[in-house]
Amino acid sequence: MAAYLGAADQSVDGVLEQESLTVLERMTVLFDDLIDDELDKRLKGRPSGCFSVNTALEAADDPALAVAHGQISKNLRDRLAVMASYLRVGQARGDIACAMAPASQAEVINGAVVGIRVASRVGSGRESMRAIADGALLVLTP
Image (cartoon, rainbow, N blue to C red):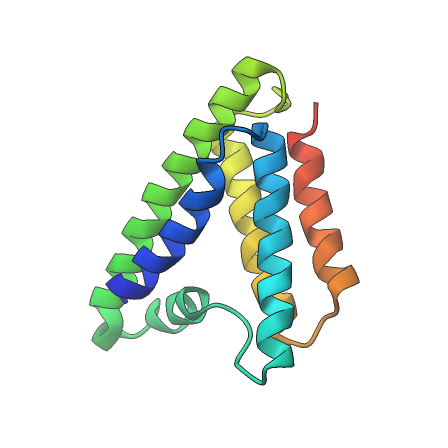
């Protein structure tokens, strides 16, 4: 689990650290990459969705999976804090809306990511996943 979460974190961090882009552009790239990845997995016959999302759902009620659940929960808290810090910078620079606190915006982004993963898992198309992403981006757009 730790290796999977670490690889996922590195992928996201690679986008977040692109200082040539505004924070809003980075969030857009994150969603674009996520949607493309989900559709690519489907095209190649690999399972869509997200291992950590699926594990979190299963582990919540299974004492045998308490360690995995703890790892996912900690990773989520850490990733939300990282995301909020980037959003805070974006708000200060004027490229992220200030109508919500950065921590709340990070929760919206996370909810959209989970929603896109679930939508992919049930066979939704690009348009459906794009609608989820665009809804989250509205919260960020000044």
